[in-house]
Image (cartoon, rainbow, N blue to C red):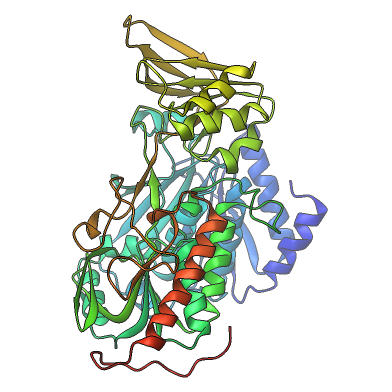
Length: 527
């Protein structure tokens, strides 16, 4: 089942086992069952700590990783390969006594959860976001024997998927009821299970000493800002709803200079690791809801916590404006894309559509036409809204077709990837289908700045207005990245603007004494 290279890697990992692990396999004569048995036999052959037991289970083929000492159980229904192979390796290591990379507080919180929790996590083996959820729940199951998790390959157990009407992965069920859909962190899971956790955390956060730079947002702009502030020796905090932001959902990144190709989750992991190299107080799973000032700036969080700082740097990013039609969320990252610069090259030689006839839509169509076989532009209005020069350029290209008065009604696919879309001709009422490999939604971005309305100056589109130093209309409040009025929304530009705004905040702190604040700027060192 495993090639020689993968076997060697796995054998190296399994040397970290400190106690016995039992693999309980449920199999029949089907091809997938035989492949699973072959995988298990390979694993057993690589470590004397791993043993095999066969038993008929609820699902077949399936495998349960058991720690006999603690009676913990982590299950995989299907063949845990593809993106989920890492989940299997970690399940083996954690069940075998290898340290779990969670804080002592989180481990203790998981260990003390009351009740019994049976999680079922439906995944696709090609889903890059699913392993994060599977691994979070698996870690909890490895810590607390009253928690179990089973990864279920939706493609293999289609009857379950159909009966539960699951249209997107990851989808998580708890004790038979829907628990979560999409990416969810271990902190968010605990907040849902432990109802008192959020209030305890809020109280803890409110007790923190004031910061000199408080960054709001954990995407590329926020990460860069935090690193630059910390390198200046400033007391720095970063508070984020989800570390990584929108980048975590980006499939392929091929325009990050000096890195020929990477994936969003990998870049996010590297960003977080880099931030953690510095003395930055990271507060994740926290959403900002209000910013006020009374000598110090006070940031209120959804949990009720209040953080204080001499300066605040807003890097809350933006989210893609969605079509809100059936199939869009299901095939996001599987043919539905929002960034032609990032994902366009992945569709070389294929047929794609662009939704939106404004400047961004027609620019995307022109860019894509140089890469793909054919581009269809669908515009809801009776005419395009793009500049004339862009319209003329698009018209001159032989592989761009423009359809106006087109209302997209559904994204279609084969369960794995997009295969087309349905639209209605608003002039005639007729319905049409277009066969496609990709759909690029270009109907604008929504800046995550609604909560700042009336606090800092915003553009009519809701973007934070900043000057050349990244400062907003409020002295001491800076902003960076896609949430600002920066004309181009790109990862590398966001990082640069984060660094720029952080240096602006540093300059502000130098020029403003602490006569109205409670903290002092610490000694700095050269960046």
